[in-house]
Image (cartoon, rainbow, N blue to C red; front, side, top):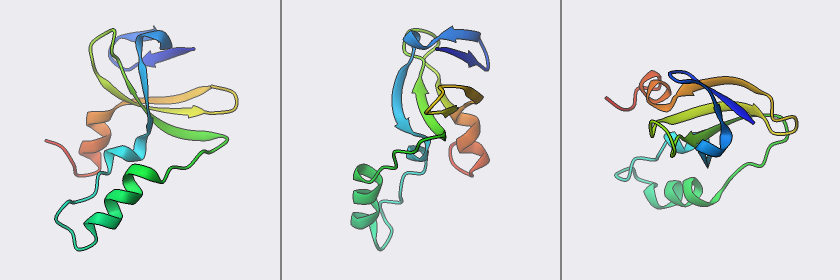
Length: 95
């Protein structure tokens, strides 16, 4: 599978490490009233979709960037790749 890196262009998926659902960017606030339940759900409850899915990938054997890859889990077709820092910033997180 080829991942079209937004900065480096097309890269082989073997350069990356798959890290799971992109919702991991939305880590709960540890000071919230329901922090224990929110962290339990964050750590252990996962969807296993067939079809379009947003995933986190780490470019371990490259520039060490984090990417949010939108991929069809049935066909492996990649429809969008974004830097995770840009996604987090757009959601009001990060610097």
